[in-house]
Image (tube, rainbow, N blue to C red; front, side):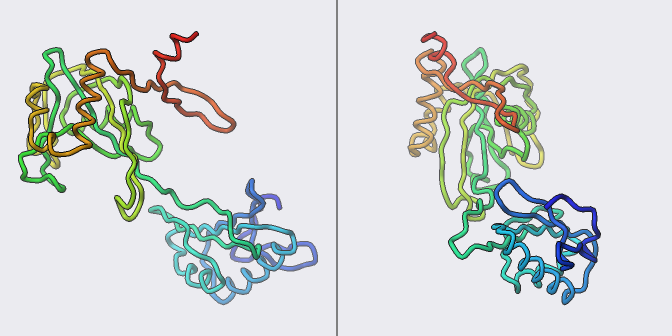
Amino acid sequence: MAASSTDPMVGEEANGGVTMLPAVEDKYGGVMTEMSRPMDPSAFSALLRSSLSNWTLQGKKGVWIKLPRQLIGLAETAVKEGFWFHHAEKNYLMLVYWIPKQDHTLPSNASHRVGIAAFVLNHKKEVLVVQEKTGRFKGQGIWKFPTGVVNEGEYIHDGSVREVKEETGVDTEFVQVLAFRQTHKAFFEKSDLFFVCMMKPLSLEINAQESEIEAAQWMPWGEYNKQPFVQNHELLRYMTDICSAKTNGHYEGFTPLPVSAPDLQGNLYFNNRDLSSRQ
């Protein structure tokens, strides 16, 4: 079915004169319809039923309905017809329905949050550390790497530069991803990917973020390592070992390379040193 400009409040006529919701085909044998104007729930229910019947005859699989925030009242009607919530953003709710009798093969909602920790070492072998004003480390006197969450549409290397600047005021240049950790049930039951990133400082003056950071400083690397907080946690011990090995030239992380793929642009992170040595 081709894209239609027909008002979804009225619907469009399919072959045979049956009124249906206007929709566009997706790449996986399904259809998507986006509501744009208010509609009586009973009329929407009838239109939804006729549309599902025709899409079933056409052999369609997944059916997606995108409801803008102002039409959220139609969600109850869609759920009663067998749709379920797939995901929500600040301006819309996406619902989905599976037509075939077999178990559905629809992709799940986004499953991971992406975070970073920034390892920033200056020419004096001092590491940039912060004490947090909020969160689980509040008031514990713990010095830690600047950390944060990568924004939607933001690359890991860009997010790490931004987070260091926001928390400490220090300008940096991304060097490499040194390691990453995966955990589950971390944030609203989602999984978490946490990337340890090495950064090169481009400035030294610290201007701590007032809203989130209690204090920030350049701390001797050895002093950071001796903290009980670091010594008593396996993850942090591994992180410091990896950072030390990288600093001493005994470890190579992953450098981003802009690459293209069908319909997508992105970055491939890989060990460039070892790959280059084989060529």
